[in-house]
Length: 390
Image 1 (cartoon, helix red, strand yellow):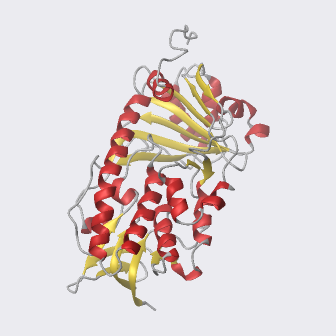
Image 2 (image 1 turned 135 degrees about the vertical axis):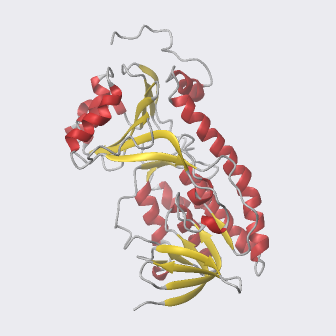
């Protein structure tokens, strides 16, 4: 049986941004319905660790009344950073200084914190949006995969890279960045994968070379989450059977010929699936003209590569600031949306430009020199050391 319902505010997508918006609205007595395509909160994994920035993600959690609860989820020591080259020579090693300006937290646990802070009926699970249109009376209608429809006076697209809501505002589509990730896990790393645990250290690893690298970080369950990254054509994975883990690993490691075995083991020793993740981005400075009753937040508005560490933080900041704008402009949705977008556009443009520049820097011919200089504000202590023979 199909259903046809109306909600004053519809938020499409129960990611961190959409849930932050719903929570801030809830605190201000404003009801909203979050439409999420997943059947439940546990339908799929939520990814690895996030560093939550003081000026954006943490500020959003304060606005949501959840900052102290968030602090209890932080991974001790997770801000430690190591930068290596392809020979596993250490160019930078910094311990977590305990200041907490960018503490690491598990994305899934952070999402659960937001979900648990909402009324049970706030999220409508299994509601996959297949089409969106604006009706003659100015309301917006969402068609769902089950044939049902939802109408809303205010529609917010928090539905990620391939947003169904974005076409109401913009013809822009994400473009392939030239970089692909392949993602995997090393569970119980200290016991089962001590070599990999040692090379990663207690927090984040960047092992970089020209056009390729390994990114890895500790997780709160004792595992190490790994990304092999390399510049490649968009269709590079089309001929690879990723259900054949051995063949997939061989294809990935072909990009890392001559790299130190302690680094290639991050992929070679994993027995978990290898998952290809092509990296896409919207144009830097993506924006749109004001359209009544609809806006975007997070990746739907400003998808960028992860090399500024801003995606989740900006999504949460977007959600919090949009919620506060709506609370500050009761009865005047258009003024609220205008205020929100005017602040969001330049903020997201700056972060997207930084992300695009850092992608180039991380995979330049002289990598990891540029990243070390970025982190230290100066020179590279290993730059003049002789490289081991290949």
